[in-house]
Length: 248
Image (cartoon, rainbow, N blue to C red; front, side, top):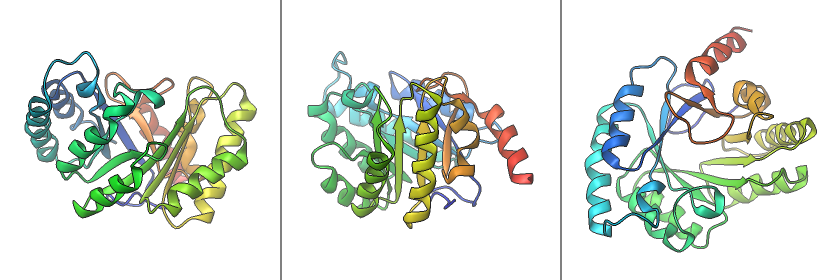
């Protein structure tokens, strides 16, 4: 397992999602979560601020982001800023995606998420590098788990595009799907120089959130309070299992 470039230490990271309708509410969540044991990084999901029903203009959203990110920075917990598009299960319309990620990059966080399937992803990769942010390339399939060859191809596409981290998440419909995801993650972790994250979503995939590191996954996503995806477990639960496995 290769460690994440924006999280100190070599152990598998626990990333806590922060998901709120306003920057102020997200900042409050970050303050509350920062004192919990086992939290290695935040993922601030800012796509709710770009949802179609939001009334603020771009200037208002940018001011909210900038003001709230100061709280994240003061927490001293590394922050991955993510815009999840409607196409991949989030709130941001696809036609607003590039602008929203550009706003994320302007904060100069430790890392930004860029969906590899969106047009203009190469330009967003370059913009993030110019600001000194690591790029987590991501791909999510909410309907099913693709065959192993497609998953490995997606990891390879991300690595070839210059991502600092490659993340793939898929929805299983059977234990075989979970095993397919874990196997593809392991092979990708051996094939590429960058860290990889592999997640099988939902209740069937919960095991991948607990012991994905045994299959080469550099991080998992766990909750303090409300989560951002089905099947997520609490940071405390994941930290206990992580401690047991690391001792082994």
